[in-house]
Image: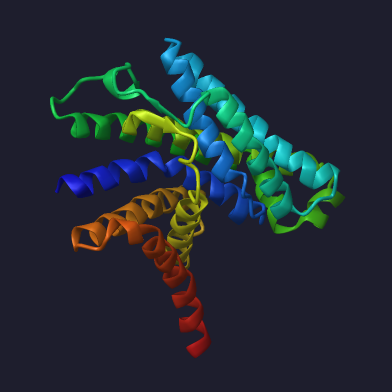
Length: 288
């Protein structure tokens, strides 16, 4: 049971990545690989500021700001220099490795002895159950904030930019600015996942972001499958399903470990799981 509770907690920590991928890929149709770097950036900034005893609100703002700057750089390279979005993300992600290593100053930074977000509130004696309450409140507030943003005029303009860029540009909307801001928001959310997971696991690591984009992608694909099956059009319900996708993804990995699969094969299992959830709907539709 403890394994599945840990998976649930990790799924909630990865909600930011899932929301970020949802914004970049499903709203703007941009495959943003900056995710790997901005996730680590969030963790690195969190770790360093915790070791310097900075207040929690300052750490949170610094993480959001750092992730937003990383995403904005990708957006600027893509829109202003007219470089392919995938390549722009790869360039920024590669540069962020050096930035993260410079900030961290080492490959791994332990944080177990330091106060964190999960030690602020002690409602229950069990640390995992206590973390569940804190994470649930944090992610619920984040979901409400994103849902509200996407329902505003600005959010509607963002969604319209992804659906029909030429039409939105004809209406006088600066689509380049929308993409830059959208990628900044997406990577700020991704950095928040790094902020959460670093404090949950008790360390920051320079390689923590390698392949993490597959987690967000898998979560969004699970959500998209559910959205299509249930024919959901509500933004709020879509976000809830994206969050559910992140949790389901982690629970599947936990089940894989629980049945005795070698942990060394976990990355391969992850790739196969994403392949299955991508391929099955396509195979079903082609047979129909």
